[in-house]
Length: 288
Ligand code: MN9
Image 1: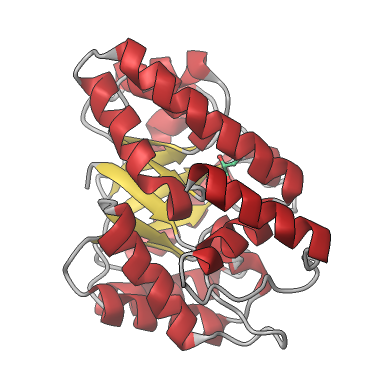
Image 2: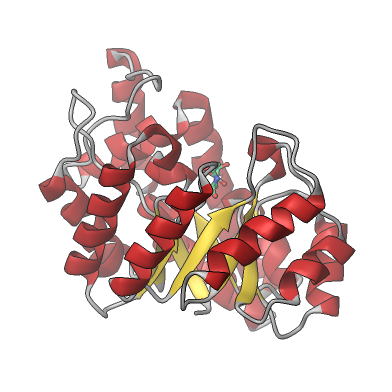
């Protein structure tokens, strides 16, 4: 379960329906061209919080059917409706996903006991391993070292997707829990996290920059930091341009230049203007 995992995009048509052919092409591109170690399915990048339970299930099915056992698959099942989270966790487990992951419950200001209960409830109902998805900037939920430790007490909790720029906390977690898996969540900080000995990374930009991400991670493990810094620099030039142009929309446009039918983003995410589509094509030409 170590290595570079793409936070998978999903292809949607103009009406917001899943474009199955396009989704399969995105999976294939990640396996055949980017050569990543695994896929993280129905995360933020998959527009998970904008789609129905049925669509989430459909995506789990299509991705598993296309990827088979070629790479590792993690199913993000977190939802404010805990019954839905359990249902999705069971569904992905039946499909033989290698692990499940759940975002910390958000919107209501849940206290830590409630958050812990959420994870333990999901895990009581499913025979699979869990990766906590922590992304304070989007959820408003920050946990400290002791709280991560309490969640890790459940043996089925095998790790965390750590999407935060807090390298002090990241180092403390690494040091305190050497046996748990830590995945870095901000692609622009991959090298910094790799130096702290994370086990892997999960990211949106790996859909189009997977090979460089793999190089950064592997060079850092070998201690070849000067080379790794060079590749992180190019990567961050790319990420800066993507962020400025519109994150998910631009990644989809870049995929289209590679013959991948990546579709558009679901509303309320807005479509790129013609000018921004041109810009995305230029970014693709320059970096991908
Ligand atoms: O989870 C991604 N987070 C979100 C990982 O999309 C919210 C990252 O891969 C970022 O998209 C990426 C750009 O900031 O690092």
